[in-house]
Length: 271
Image (tube, rainbow, N blue to C red):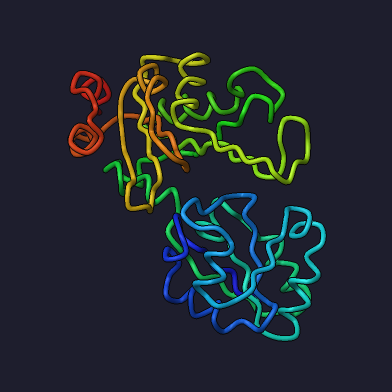
């Protein structure tokens, strides 16, 4: 059995009870994880190991996508678990690994956990069914272009034409920097930086909503013009940025009450 289990959004306590049980039931040496697609900012690997009483084999991208045999071998001979931050099959998609397991006749299951997408809706009061396609804002040096890729702006504008909100995931770079592979490199794009990119490349007066540290005890939500958010400080990672579309009156009230949004700006986005 190969179990894919999400660890949730923040620290070693964010995992579900079912996920915790799957880790406990795994054979010795059969607990694997990756943190290159997302990261638990409230806990490191040592915290996870101490909390669950296991040793965790952390795999890099190549160790998951190009050389998954140790994971598959462990699952073929016993019970293995593969861990990721968030939900294991949403932002951190590992369908290829699951299909490889099925090709070898290995049974699989998925244990879900809270996701950044669900938290963004819950914390802001923006209704989840009014979100359109999500996009990612990368560091400039990571995509070789100035400011913001056209594809990201196209996604925001396409969503807004339909009255839909856009969730912008912000770039995470672990183990790879501007000069190439670097095991000591870590960079987490902040929401103020992301708002500055969009303000410069798109519209500084558009409404934006910052979500910081979703799932943590000190999560934060702020709404303002992108140009104003670019001058803000929102604390430790991880951050997300939402560009709302048309606002239902309850959503507008939520942004004013929960995110300190200026009334005139919110009223300008009402449906």
